Length: 413
Ligand code: ASP
Ligand code: MG
Image (cartoon, rainbow, N blue to C red; front, side):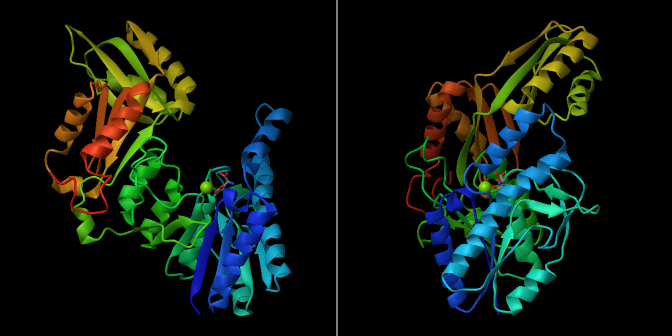
């Protein structure tokens, strides 16, 4: 029998009523004769609340104990969902990550899945039961509970879908799918029917918070199609899969805005070999991920180096910059929190010249100044003033024809 793998996010199990609605949907699949495995996240804001509780009793809670604590959120959800299914007369059994066979490494709070051994789940499915599995958690070689990083229930679902041989993985969420832009910023944004793994990974890393980046990576490595869809209605959502040939011709697939970014400039550093290394090795020591980087042309013997990091890394980056500035005899360090990163993403960029020129032209048309630029094969990012980010997103969305009704060739230019 075909295995159907469904994952429900925290908002889909936030209230008793919603849990009952999920139970109904799950049973519908079972009635169609499928083997059904359901992965759930912690209800509502439970994970954030548990983190806050830890912060009230300890200044630096250990990773091991945090994982024991955080795992209770998902454990609440599986028990309640299994009860709701049983209440409707169907057989369901809940599993923690460990019971579900999610074996991870030792990195508490961001553990990687090493293997999946779902024999207990398999047995219950064979006995005709619905399996309800806790997302976001696993067990390491010491039999300690681990968690898979924020949003990690997506990864649990994808990994189980692969291990159980499901044809695809359904991710049920509180939005209708993946959009061409954040509809709160760009009202004309529309839902995409399909998006490639590579595009989705760029969008996920750019702050489109619909799916966990590592889950998309895992699905791509195993060529597992993902269907992101609404848990509130039956309509189609967005398929994430290998790109189809038509889609390659879609130059720009989406526009992303990341306002949780900050900019640093180390002014007046000597223009000689080893300077960039002196600065960025200090950032690396503090585990700071650097995003866009620009070095100004040297004026005389001196140059400026600017870069962006995620807001969460600002404190660590500031310390690294100060230390480097002192070691290099730089003129000073500037911090700028009023920036945002605006990006366009599209698999078709690889084969289309002039996309960058067009992007810069659209921003210039709005009088928006570009402070830093970065690109990959399928993405171009610009750092702009934060208060112009929404205008930038709208201009790009419009200029690349994303608001039109789904003609994949639009925006080709
Ligand atoms: N409950 C976890 C979180 O909030 C995992 C998840 O939602 O996927 O990050
Ligand atoms: Mg989530």
